[in-house]
Length: 362
Ligand code: PMV
Image (tube, rainbow, N blue to C red):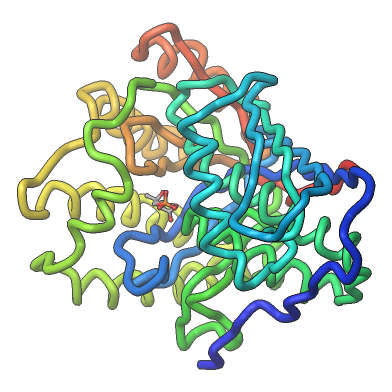
């Protein structure tokens, strides 16, 4: 596999004299084949395949401001219009870690303003959309300030590479539809270092919906970083890597041919495997709640009763992602409103769907 490094390390030739701002809106994504376990510098131990969402997004504006001397990253960070020290510190560390790929980070001061289109504390991982939006802004800023001329493909590749260094799954959010991250023999051009587009998709799959049933919204007792760590020395680690490669291969075939039954089987297998790996790790832990299990059982039973193609997936948390096709929207909405949402606190559901990827707003 080629050792891909972000192309160009353009610098400002003359110091910046006026503010330059860029804005990107980037969506979150839901993994169908899960990334679980990492190695090296934020590299995945197995390939993953995700669907980019459309409603749950982060909108970020990055403004480059003149500064006196070159040095480590200097930032002012605002979340929802207010300074946010904790996340600001994480972003500063991140910017310093990627400065060798983007020298302007040592040459200008940055004002970063960000907000999410989805409510806080819904259990939706905001790091994927946040780092995707930020990486896209940084690449746009570099292109503007240094008159860099690169192709759209090169631009997305660099953004995906940089987003990955912020949060692994974020690298998939720079692409529309279905994105693959991690080298696998079944997809030429796939890479551990950045996500690639999978475009040979049956049109039905672009009509997929993801209704997120918020079972619980409190901070997780074990973070995903800790979860990834627990794969080191996990008794099933080798088998998991093999399974993920096979599931990616099978899912690519299903997505291409329009095989919904195979899609359902793989997606649910991945969700349950992810949680089984947590439970069977050293000092095993469980992120599902009784309601999660209750809803999963009802979804599987309802599918058998109705014959409608619907399935669930889970992130590293208790919330259910209910996946279904546009043509079945009315029946599924009835199921959600009349049954599933009544099983959860505050009946909170976020309706999302397969998305067209990030948008450059300014
Ligand atoms: O990107 P991270 O480090 O937050 O890990 C994400 C892990 C899962 O959401 C469980 C799976 C995935 O592929 O997104």
